[in-house]
Image (cartoon, rainbow, N blue to C red):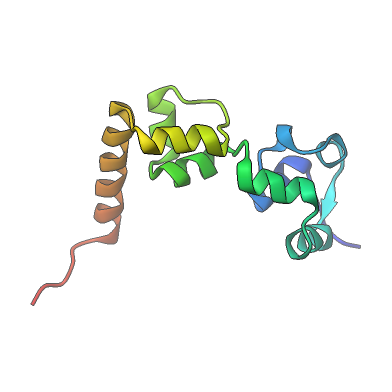
Length: 117
């Protein structure tokens, strides 16, 4: 018997925003095999969600180059689609510039000191 995943877990593993998925996907548990099938041969709805969103917060954060907590500090709590993300990247507001810098510094600190010489 295969392990089943709740829809929210399956959506996270596919990198999609669950409320934007078809109702059938949202209301059904999924096996790991089903997820593998969706990854290897994605249906049109999955291709569209991955391309244009709306995207879950972790994907939005990654695309904007900030942390999830940076999104929260900015007050950005809703899923964004590719067009909305594109507008933010093209004309970054002050919060995005600040949060990118914070995120960059945090990643550098986690990486530790670099070797010189």
